[in-house]
Length: 161
Image (cartoon, rainbow, N blue to C red):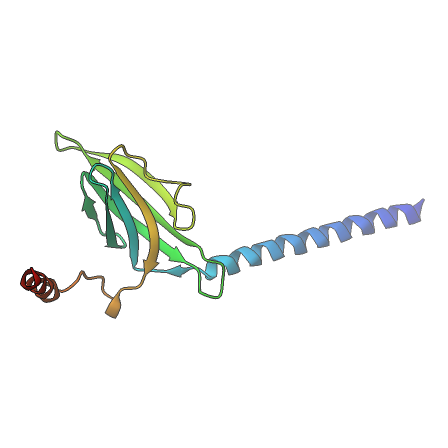
């Protein structure tokens, strides 16, 4: 009888130890996966105007805002995985819609995924917005194209006509 009780206690101790190792390993794997995320400073979106059928390329700095039609898009975070891992690009965004009376209403707030744009898509009757990638800006500061380059390109185009 005493031997049975000792075996029973020993088996409970072993189960507790194995459970502790399983919990610890799951915790460490989760920490390692979180540490592999690269936090970027710019979120890159594609935006479709369904009326004109035009797709626009939007590069928005984190915590910056950009207007697209009646929408205002504000990315809060944009994470990617390193090139050595399976691709995963995620961004937490807030989208507001400007109404005809000038007020703004929250249209979407949540995570979007570049690899699966339909999972948490911004649903609007006129506009579609989806994440395409994240990136770090050149020189560490998010800026748009210099105005001199934009002017030069328009001059070249006008000469060709």
